[in-house]
Length: 295
Image 1 (cartoon, rainbow, N blue to C red):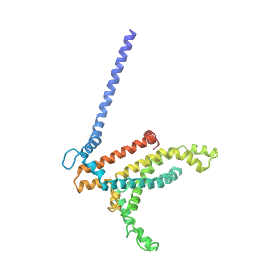
Image 2 (image 1 turned 180 degrees about the vertical axis):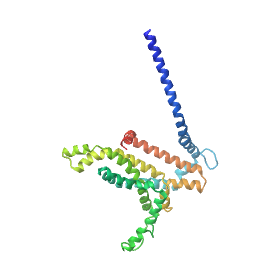
Image 3 (image 1 turned 45 degrees about the horizontal axis):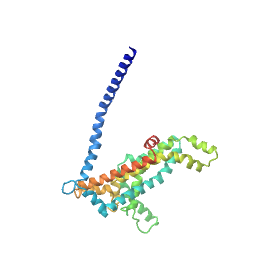
Image 4 (image 1 turned 60 degrees about the vertical axis):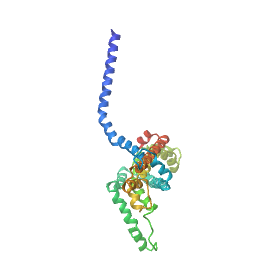
């Protein structure tokens, strides 16, 4: 009798478990539908359109054109060069600044963080045109240098690679600082004190203890900056002056000027694949869970 009761209880528990799983699945259905509507379907349509040629048939025409065209190759080289240099500049400026903020008392660190967050409170287009006003040939910076007789003729700061890098580094810097700052704040200062008590100099304690612990936050920020730069449009278009053409600008021109949705979709697919490849490589170096926990 006891065996029968145990068996019946086990079956009842299994039914309750199945019912609970079914209820949970029902609760997730609206979310799955929303994800499918906003992410899966557009990406699937993007892949489908990338295989549509000029005559409306399925073909690899858009991809072969990218491989054969030197213009597309230059665009990809420019895109990756600008993205890499912007990420490097953000790392060189952002890491020391974030380290300084992490060592401040919370009150002063909060005040500094307000300065970091100010760019998020203004329009991207406004910030980009503000740099154009500052850096153009008759801008405020050139006028100041001319008045001080430091230069004899205006310096060309914009409508080139340097102007694009200045604007993009300014806009992307908070995306590096925010996850890195959260990571640095979570590092136990007793670890650095322990290294100092064992005879390590401040620089040695930093490089052997603090810096390795801050790497997950640094990688998270670098990934965010680099991936965002790959698809950036406004700042290169304004500060580049048509001389710095990135992939996003080519996608826009394919649609607006040539009405070539297939070519634009193929470029989008390439950017998407590159982004996924970068995330995969980064997950091999540092686990995604470790990055998310640190940042």
